[in-house]
Length: 66
Image (cartoon, one colour):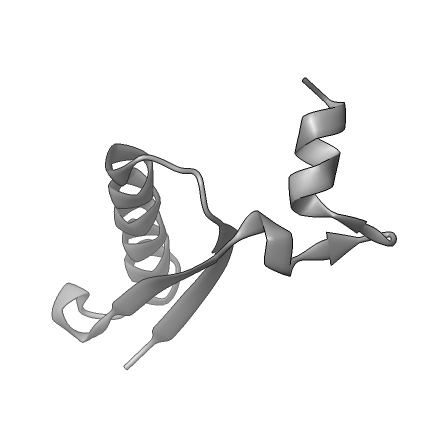
């Protein structure tokens, strides 16, 4: 049973997340032949103020880019 966990910063729409989950499920099915009913995929989201890149919080980086 393939188990796939995806880590994302918050901010995607429900439609985007559904599309991602479907695409990953298809990719696993097609690449290793796992039966669809055995594939488990989930998203773990976390706030942008709880993730840091190169010493800058993701929430602060996004404000700089606007």
